[in-house]
Image (tube, rainbow, N blue to C red):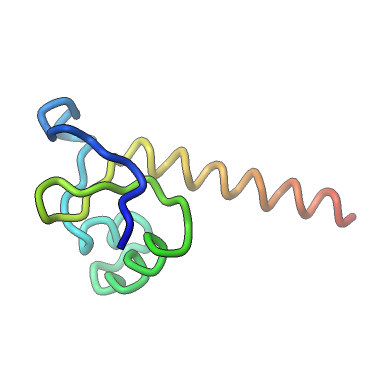
Length: 83
């Protein structure tokens, strides 16, 4: 798996913004901690803003929310162009 963002240490991130572990990322994205495989698939096939802290997959809530908003904007733009 390729990391899409590198962070020197977790100490530079606000603790409430940090999500640690693929299960926690899955819960944030899908509302289901069991969707870990989906998180790893996204990590391999998209530009999802995740990184590793030690050996754990991690993300910032704020960056994931921005990424999701970007996907929504792209979808809305494609829908608008098709009409």
